[in-house]
Image (cartoon, rainbow, N blue to C red; front, side, top):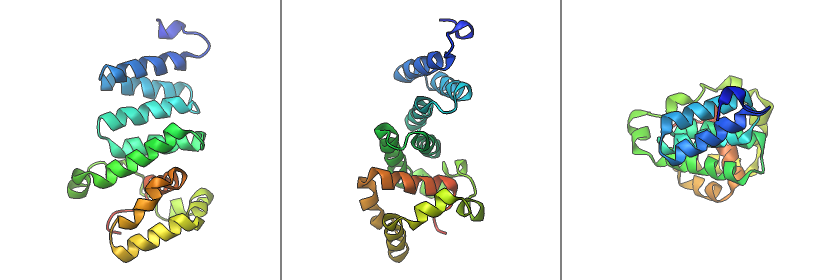
Amino acid sequence: ADPDNASERPYLLFSSRGACSLQLKRYRQAMADADKTIALHATFTTGHILKARVCEMTEDWSGMMTSSVRAHDLEPENETALVLCRDALVSLLSDENVHRTGKHLQGFSPGGANAMAREDMQEIMRDPKIQTALAGMQRAQGLGPLRPILDDLPACAKFCKLVSSGLLVEGA
């Protein structure tokens, strides 16, 4: 297939080729095709899901989380995006390299006051499940209270959005 002469929707060609490359473990090509898909059609959820899956295979947890959150923002009911958000959070929190070196955390924006000023972040912070988890984590000085969130995919996606915005920083 010739990407330059593709139909009116060339992003589908790149998305399909990227999925094939992912299956063949050609991660650089898969990532390039995911990025091209997103560049051609930024609101195509599948492009963001493809990118999240490539990041998962290359153990880029912040990239996985960021792409999963973008897919979730586009389609809040998309089960694949919700599961990828949860899996990214679990992987990020359980990766010893992240805790030891901070690897994968540099992909997140600094957040802080700018992120907190956003209405979507304020809405997430008003969610009772999120408030309970954050308060429990503060009291426990650990991640144990986060476990119930992991079973609630929509709440987990909200928590991921807080992490990827830079509002939640380990040790802060």
